[in-house]
Image (tube, rainbow, N blue to C red; front, top):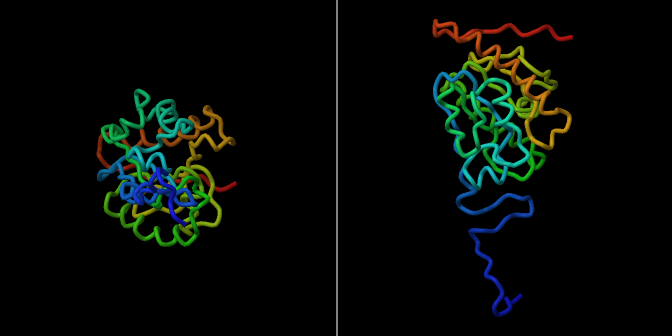
Length: 212
């Protein structure tokens, strides 16, 4: 069909697919990790949202409670903004994702994407050696095929020496957890992190609770 005269030109670099994934060159780039070696905690989301991928900052959505919860749980002395996300490193924390492809909703991801991402993700953990890997939501951990069921909190399996922890997803869409309940869950991890800072430099290796 011929384009009408004066109609806006569809720029191939600014199109958005029907699945909600932008195809511009900028959006094809993975949202950069905030990461360093020997972090106390590496927080791990499922995959970047569209707004995070466009802005280059993690947990940038207005309804996302990640930064507020980190502060209320004790991880940061003040509430960081998404634009200050690299400031997490000075406190000993980082951020990554299991899958790098940005989507409007994590439900758009296929099981195969989790399977394909698992090896590279574990190689990342082996290289950077965080003390804790904290998955934000059970799906981020279970999706890689490690467990069929996941309990909240400390997991039985380790990942290249790192203790694995499952935290509730801080997204505003997660209505099962109020802000207070999120802060309580995250503070449990923070108290374990404090136990690693015994002055010896050796990471504390907690023992998971027995399953009820």
